[in-house]
Image (tube, rainbow, N blue to C red; front, side):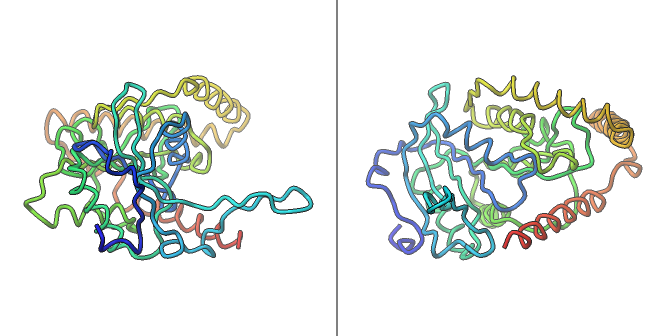
Amino acid sequence: MSGFDEIVTFNSSATEVPQGLPLVIALSGFSDAGQLVPQLDHAILGEGGEMLVAQFTRDILYDYRARRPVAQFDGTEVIDVDMPELELSLVQSGSGKPFLYLHGYEPDFRWDAVVACIEEFIAEFSISSVTTFHAIPMPVPHTRPVQSSVSGNRDELRSRWSVWKPRTQIPASILHVLEFRLFEDTDNEIPFSSFVLLVPHYLADSELPTVLRAAIERLADATGIEIIDQGLAMRESEFLGKVAEQVDDSGDLSVLVEGLERRYDEYMASVARAQRQEVDMENLPTADEIAAEFESFLAAQSKENDSDK
């Protein structure tokens, strides 16, 4: 991998990485509704024990002025600056199954080079499968299970987990580019699945424990990797309890949630019927409607980032 020395540095322990492991990818900086990525990072890396395999060069790939690192000031001096990292780690799951985890920031620059580097990882370590995650805001209620859209070449996962299959255009992430590049080569048969979790748009900025549970369930199904988060059930109960109180106290919010529940239930009933027979789906939410909701969210995030500069 000498051709990528400028953008990635390998740990000397990288030679100890077993061949044939799954690769899991979750990056911040694109769309992270429900704060899925930091929650997934904490669940996977929080207990320690991971081994750094490779680290990407931040000064080449990261735009500091677009996403400023956070400095900690104690009143008299700066005591820390939280600098972003993009790393490939070897992780041991709660069930003892090892896997590779690419985590950190989505690069601002050199996408082609980074994607080519990930492809080299896949070849170098004889990766057995690639599974990626991100989350987007959708007009769905928090009182129903978190659903997902799934792309890739694993029909069984799309059949089980993909309830929304749009034909639309959205702003691309580097993981979209990776998926496209992998399947430009028709001879590439590596199992690949990209899970897009659908988060209630009115909770998109909150740390939503239910979106983490949904990711953990899908990761286990796709790879056999079991992530154990002992406090997840309690966090879910506490969070949903607080949201329920706010809904009960707000007539407008109650009306919103009831409308979303009705639309969600109608949509899921139609999906269930469509799995048994072909049905007319013209009255369901359109891909353009969902894409508009997504683009509005991204625009709001961009304005928020600009205000922080």
